[in-house]
Image (cartoon, rainbow, N blue to C red; front, side, top):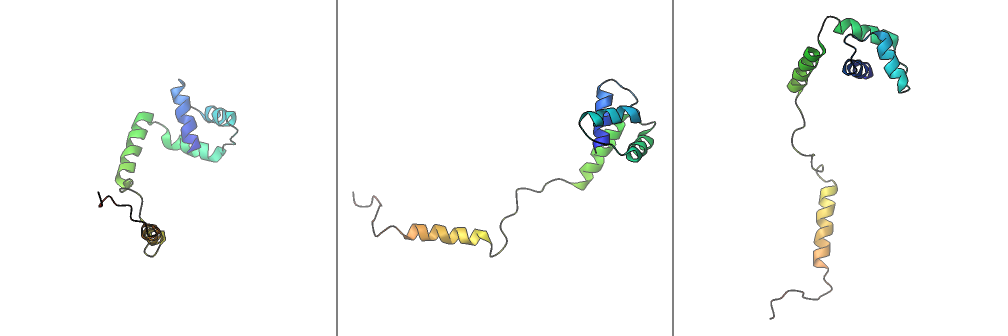
Length: 105
């Protein structure tokens, strides 16, 4: 992923066809030691392709995976949710025998 990011930064910086050296310089500037084999593999896979087309194809693939489905899952059965309900119920019942309602106007 870092190799891809460095490649994209190089392209944004005006280098039309970034080389292994360009990618290595960018990664070195942030203290990363790039794996030369991975950089070579990446460059061989992207060779002859337009970055915009590669990004578009990748976005389509991500779209088929799907995204998050709604909100976070609730607590498991018998989990923390029941404890909170019980605690709230206890708080409601413990009014010290005092009626705080406005029924006696």
